[in-house]
Amino acid sequence: MKKTILLTLTTAMLMMSGCTQETQNKFGRAIQNWTGTDGVLEVYAGDKLVKRFMQIDKMSTAISTNGNTDRPYRFGYGVLDENLNAKVDKDEKKVYFEVSDYSTSYVFYENPHK
Image 1: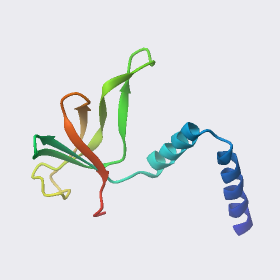
Image 2: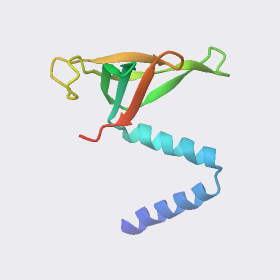
Image 3: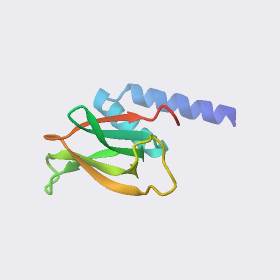
């Protein structure tokens, strides 16, 4: 069993070394999206925190209808931290959200308290 795992990992590493940096980045993001993360998105109005979404597994960039260009916003699903206590309370629900590239100040990070 250990030999099979070691052989698989070695083969994957050799295949990755022949990929371009962009291909490696896409592969890395795919693994991260598959394994999931515990992301936090904080939205600010000036220097004041106005919204927080927690337990986000990924944020995606919207693509145009033609599929050729990115749209100027990101979207995802997360639990709305209504009372901004940085904890998911039992009455807080998972919601869809969008943040604009133009007018929204936001910070997205992995939750350090998981």
